[in-house]
Every structure is written in structure tokens, then in C-alpha cells.
Image 1 (cartoon, rainbow, N blue to C red):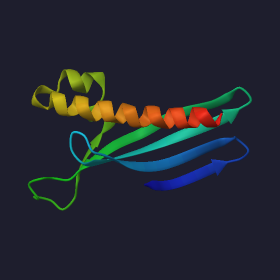
Image 2 (cartoon, rainbow, N blue to C red; image 1 turned 45 degrees about the vertical axis):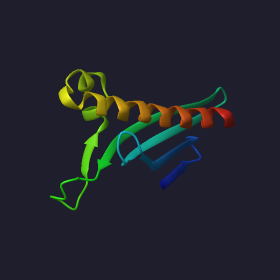
Image 3 (tube, rainbow, N blue to C red; image 1 turned 180 degrees about the vertical axis):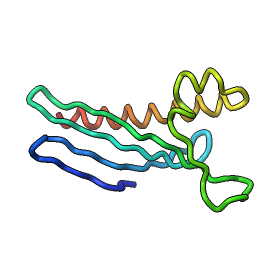
Length: 110
């Protein structure tokens, strides 16, 4: 689900806001932004502003629960995960697969 693209021809940069649906360990939406800078040597990819939206199962609220990447996939959050350790590891694994695929597709262009 592409949310938006901004292109700066003078700086030779592209900023993309994107959303993708993750299926494992549960259905959730991952939102992120990435910047691509192009120069004579190739390109540089920088991913930022990762967040996750999870529907609340108890239906206490219509709005989904939103987590930042720092709350779920960093080493520190995994070390302090407690009962959510496996869930966080699965989210981290799927996030890395998604972003590695993005990097591979971009590398194929350049």
C-alpha cells in the first residue's frame, strides 16, 4: 500500500511513505518511510519511522494499537520482552525480510 512519493531532482533523492501488511505472528500493518539518494557511485537506502498497527482483539477500542520499532524490534526491547519475546522475534524477522527484499529490489535497479 503505497502512501506517497516525494522526489527532489536537485538533491537526487526520493522519499517514499509506504505501508505493508505483515502476516506473522498476526495480521498487522507496518508503516515506514524510506529515502533513496542517488549519486554517481550508486544509491543509498535509509529506512526510518517504522511503526506497527495491531487491531485490538478485545474490541475495547475501535482504533488499532500502535507500536514504534523501538518498542518491538530493537535488541533492547527483545531482551526485556518477557512473555512477548517470541511475538517480538517474529515481528522482527518479518520486518527484516520485508526491508531486505526492498533493498534487493532497489539494488537490482542500480
